[in-house]
Each structure stands twice: as C-alpha cells, then as structure tokens.
Figure: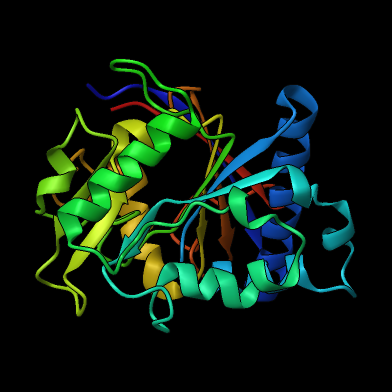
Length: 266
C-alpha cells in the first residue's frame, strides 16, 4: 500500500556541483552510521553521475577521501547487469575502476553481485550473501545504512523497469529480472521492499532528459507498473533527492539555498 513521506530535494547548479553534493552526502551517511553502529553498510548504483561521485571520493586532492571511514565500510550493490565483472558495462566494474581500486577497503568487505552466473543462480547467491552478512532470520530483510538510487528517463530505478516481473515481487530480497527493452536484458536487482527499508535512501539524478519522468513520478498519478520509481516510499518517512538544475526544472522552485520540500501522499 502507498504510504506518505516527506521529500527534500537539493538542487545543484550543474552536474559537477551535483557530484560534489553527492560525495558530501556519502561521507555524511557513512560517518553517521559508523558513529552509531560501528560500520556502514552502503548499497551502490551504477551510472554516469555516480561515476563522477566515485572519482571525487577516491581523489587524493579532494577532502572527501580523508573524511571517509574506508576500513569500516561494507559495500553492496543495488543491481547489476548479467555480465562478467571485467565487462565495461558492469556496475561492479565501473565502481572498481573509479573507486574501489583506489581506496583502502578490505576486499572481504566488498560484496558484489555475480553477474557472470545464470541470472536466477546469481540472485539466489546474493540473497544468501545478504542473509549471512546481515544475520537474517525468517522473513527479516536487510537494513542498509545508505542506499543510493538513480532514475531512468522511463521512470525505472534499480533494475525495476516498467512492466517487468520484479515490479510485483514482495517476498524475495533479490531477483533476476528480464528487461526486454534493454541491451543487456537480464538484470539482478534488490527488490523494492528491501530498498525502502534503508536508513538513508536517496536518488541522484541529473539531466534535462530526466525532468519529465521525475515530475510524473512525484506529481503524477500513482502508476508504479509504468513508473517503478513510485514504489520507493521509504519506511523512515523521509526521502532525499540530489538533483541538478535541469533534472529539477519541472518541480516547484527550491528556496534560495537550493532546497525544495514536498509532502508525497498517494
């Protein structure tokens, strides 16, 4: 059932400023989790905007690297294409090339989705990994300290694409999803009931091509079959969106500090 939540959207002038805002948010979430629970379990997404953010986090000339508690991070993925880990279009490969190879995270704390396996086997193995790492019992699900999402111009998020089976999955933690409209049409994805449990859940969205779908997701009729991003209604009751000015162009104008607020009631 839909639930109301408070949205805060923070608008940056351009994609470069947005990447810096995202790097700051990563650091804030990680440090808060370590202070509260001794570790930070982060679930990452792929895409061009996260790539720029990862490069900032790994850059020794930037302040973020020194502020991040690398050795206390546990890294997970929101979704993955069914590709080998060295394939240039693998989310894991992008993250490794731009972040993981350049920072002191112990390899045992990196938990990748095995996209090279049969899709159903890969999903089952990742669900088992989550159950073991989070010490889950029965119907318990994992609670990530921070979970980063993107959004496509079709309204998808993670690998929850319009009119695909994963949109309807409510029992499993991880599923294989067939996405016929995409080049790599088998994906592995966390399910939306897992995603919405994250303590800090945010979207990172850039570009004019996202403006219309973002407007429809937030202010249009509730139709998650067509706009799966509408499924992301955080259990915490709070959602953050980090946007550039183009992506936010059809939303109500933010205040002078670049922050807009909205109450979402479905």
